[in-house]
Length: 324
Image (tube, rainbow, N blue to C red; front, side):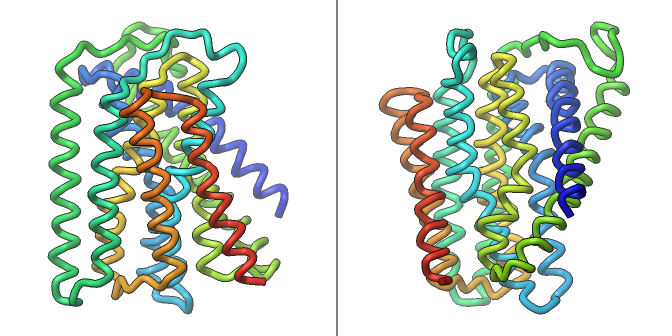
């Protein structure tokens, strides 16, 4: 079991390095700035592993599938808004990395978070809607994301695309051929999915042997594993001084997880959240609101990003105490 966990982790780390390198060059080829590349391209790619968890759980219809599916749907944005920001804050404030020029745009972070707050809040409100209305409500979430993506793409073409500082791993030709760039991104994305699958599977087996409930497993443990691609990508980008890509990767994934994935939940489940499930969503909103207000008042502060992690540990402590 330990060997499977370590193998999955190693594959995720290696794939993340190739993915970040390839996605930078793909953004350059498409003429998009770093903020748009991180918010859309990187976020959509690395959101696939954790999106597969609730989809497979809900479609399978196995016992406890609804609890696992809802836990994964709510746990992904919760983890990104708490532990994801915590890792970003630690990385931004890391000794030796702090003196580098910062490229992140606070207005882009505020834009992504304002969308997350509005749409994820609407998704949580959907639990009180009549059942026939929920399908249309879910459709509204999908439309909202499409409008958001169009806005990001437009803004991403208004400023010149940055040239990556590192050559493409699969070739030293500058600029690299587009087919090689796409091939590296696809290969790395496949590695992220496979690595996350084995990592999550091994953790689930271990957790069930330890007596964890399906919902707590899917909220506390599974998102930590499946969100590793976003987190590792962001750490790699911060180390290279590409803060806009790093922040956009996390906030863009939050936008995706707040709209398209809850829409699937409304279509595939009754979407009636119990108090514990609702608490996960509310804490995710609270953490995102805290960071949003901090960005609007003081700009990007590593300390404020680290403080957002307190919401995760607050829930874990309360949940574990409740189980016992």
